[in-house]
Amino acid sequence: MIGRKALVAATGVVMLLFVLAHSFGALSVFTGPNGINAYAQALQNLGPLLLAFRAVMVFVLILHVTFAIMVTATNWKAKPDRYAVRRTRVATFAGETMLWSGLLLLAFIVCHILQFTLHATPDVVIRIDAQGRLDVFAMMRESLRLAPVSIAYLIAMSALFLHLFHGIQSVSQTIGLLNEKTKPMFQIAGITLSTLLLLGYGTIPLMILAGMGVFGK
Image: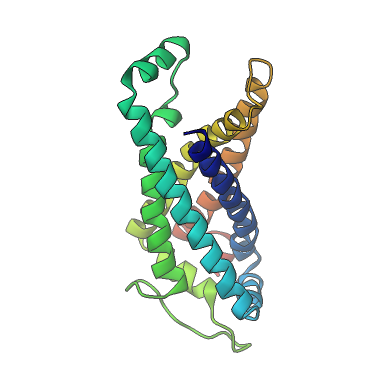
C-alpha cells in the first residue's frame, strides 16, 4: 500500500512539473500569433525527442491513474480505518472529490490531445501562418470561441484546481513532510499554486470569448 501511494505521489509530481512547463507555452498565446506559433514550431522541431517525451508522459499518466484507483479502492474497502481518519480531521471537498476530479481531468486530457495534438475534433481550424508554421493561435481562438468548448475547458481547470490543492498536501504526507507545523505551509503552497494555474489557464478562454486583448484583433 505504501509503495502504491509513493508511486502515485511520484507520478503526480512529474505531471505537476509538466503542467507548470506547459503553462508557460500556453500563456505565450497572450503575446499574439507569433509567440505561440513559434513555441509550437520549436516543439515540432524536436522531432523524435518530442515523440519520446510524449510517450513517457502517457506512461506516467497511465501509472498515476491505475495506482490512484487501486489506492482509492483499497481505502474504500477499509471502512473502519477510513471512518477513524474522518473523526480526527475535517475532510475537505477537494480531498473527498479527488477521484472524480482526477477522472474528469483524464477525460479532458484525452479530449485535449484529440483536439490540439491530433486535430481530430470538428471545432479545430487548420491554418498556416505567414511564416509557413501551423497557426496554433488561430486554432485556439476559433475553438475556444465556441461557448461549450470554453465552458468544458473552464470546468476542467476547476477540477485541476481541486486536484492540485489536495494533491500537494497528499504528496507531502506520503513523503513524510506533513505534520502539524508544516501543514499550514503546504496548504498555502497548494492553494497558491492551484489558484495561479486556474487563473492562468482559465483566463485564456475567458479573454477569447470576450474578444479582449490580442484576441480582439
